[in-house]
Length: 184
Image (cartoon, rainbow, N blue to C red; front, side, top):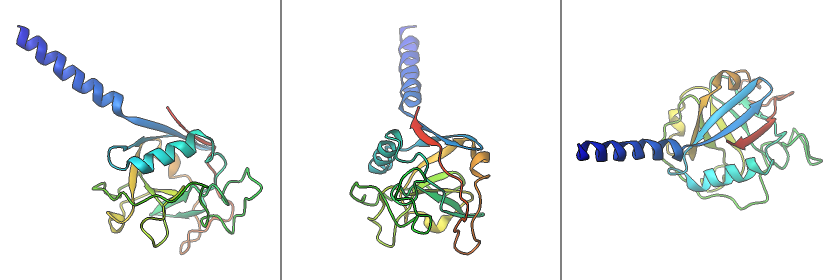
């Protein structure tokens, strides 16, 4: 009987640790709330940066400047893409970042499937800063090329409603914006 009790306690603690270890943030859009699970064990520096910018309000008011139907919605330019700031410039949105240093790539085995949150960057793999995107559909050509660090676990139907941009460039003339992102 003692062995069964010990096994039960051991198993229960593993399950409890797994549940407690999940890091969830809520992305508020005009269409509804989106819950995103972050993967600090896979991309610790990207998760840390994302949470730092989110919880300090840096993403509040940032537009989805590049949205390609069937591919992804990109946002996170806190310098030029924040509609609440005096530096807001839609024509420059996507070229800025935060005042923090760029991040080294954290390529993982996470596949870029529907709902994956991944760091946007330039041609330099170590140039991610504040921008990120959410995949509408699978994009296997991005696997191990971009730092995936989370996944939408609830509310993907609201992400699907984000205004789409030009079919070739993804540029959005009257973009939707992030209301807020905060850790739960």
